[in-house]
Amino acid sequence: MNQKNYIKNRHFGIYGGRYVPEMLIPALDELELAYENLKNDSSFRNELNYLRKNYIGRESPLYYAENLTKKLNGCKIFLKLESNNHTGAHKINNCIGQVLIAKKLGKKRIIAETGAGQHGLATATVAARFGLECIIFMGEVDINRQYPNVYSMKLLGADVIPVKYGSRTLKDAVNEAFKFWVEHLNDTYYLLGSALGPYPYPIIVRDFQSIIGQEVKKQIKEYGFEKPDILVACTGGGSNAIGLFYPFIDDLSIDMYGIEAGGKGNNFGENAKRFNNKSSIGIVQGYKSYFIQNEDGQLLPTYSVSAGLDYAGIGPELAYFHDTGRIKFDSVTDEEALESLKILSRSEGIIPALESAHAVAYGIKLATKCSKDKSMIINISGRGDKDLFITARKFDKKNWINFLKEEISRD
Image 1 (cartoon, rainbow, N blue to C red):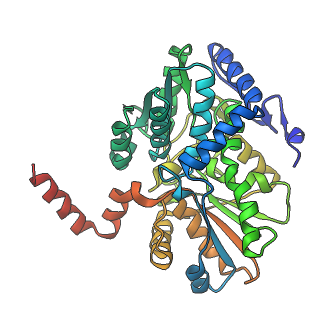
Image 2 (image 1 turned 90 degrees about the vertical axis):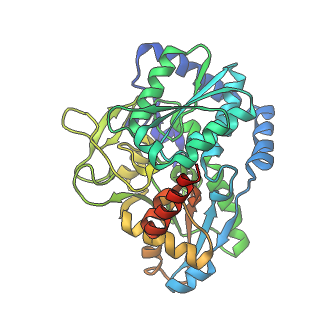
């Protein structure tokens, strides 16, 4: 799909745009111009590539999951191990690129929002690397369930601000970050974490994350395949998904699946499924897309066992590809994701993040229906360290609670 056919006037079809207060327009203009100039600048590209290789640790492996493939007796399953990146997830691909933009713009402070904490951790990491002040906004609910990442952010020197209103999750953290940015435009860079928000953020994040799919294009050939047949990724805001999918978007022979959080039920507040008859098109947080909202356009509560998928909206480019049918979207439940985490851990010795486990769960179901000569790529967007406090309570609650009690008693 040629970009100029569907990106017009800062929109992806009817989605996207920049629906923000007038005072933010100059900052977005500044960012858009800077990115257009820098993305083809050789010194910028050289510095980015150096940091990708020597700081992030790219390229990330494309691993043939031989044991899982044999277990399912279906197509060949490959795992794109973004979990091997520095900080343990795909988020740093975008953060390292955007912090270089912030440096070129002369900004002294980086702010960001985070849900699962992986984007906050990656932002705090690159801010420390470049000696910039860092503030992370995070919902109080997410702080409580993802405290290992909060601790790491603080250790890196970031100021983690709990957001205590609304649902106290990612959407509220985004609102608070935008509010702070409006009040500190001169010296502050908003490092947005997913492929959404006001234009040009969706294309900036997508371009930096597209390194995932670009590497897969080359790596799959090393296994004797000209190209993959199936791509699977979890979709919260959607940065890991669009990063895998976008380099293949023109090849209509490749099937793409974005997997949402089915949560624990089909009622409002029990899942985070944007593509069903209970969501609708709206304008929230600076962009137009699908949102879980009421008839007045107010966001409704969402839920997922994985904090990174617990978000009411989805990136505008993914919304466009949903409508055109280029990307198929489905969901898996909490229980399916948790079960797939155990299966992958015990078959391949790889513990995925709960977000990634949603993609694994769907890939497992799909693989059994596919012929053995097909290849499937599942994006393991993060590793499971950050979810220790969640998964331990699910799988080994009694011993975990006893351990925590003993740790407390030591003081």
